[in-house]
Amino acid sequence: MSLSLEIIQESETHGIEINEMIRLVGSLPIRKKKLVFSMQNYIKEMAEFEGANVENDYQNAINFIQQLEEDEVEEVCRYIADLYKDVEL
Image (cartoon, rainbow, N blue to C red):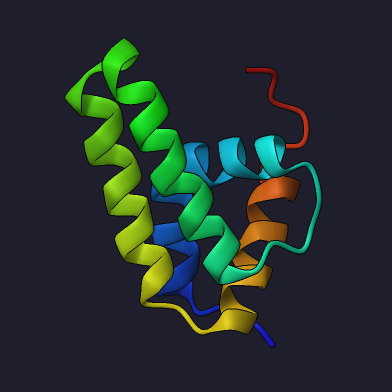
């Protein structure tokens, strides 16, 4: 399966958030349900430290992920992991 240009562009918009979850989960592939659940937990944990900006960014990423099919989520995660492989956070 190949991702559409629209999905690639949207993935890149939420790349930081998706990449952070990949790093926290520690393995690929990540199922859609696990990715969304991890993001929701991250929002709860980080909200008190980082404020509303984190919540909005991660909620937007969750909304994007929820629109995708399971196989698209796995492909987006692989794409983002590859895109960010040389980026140190």
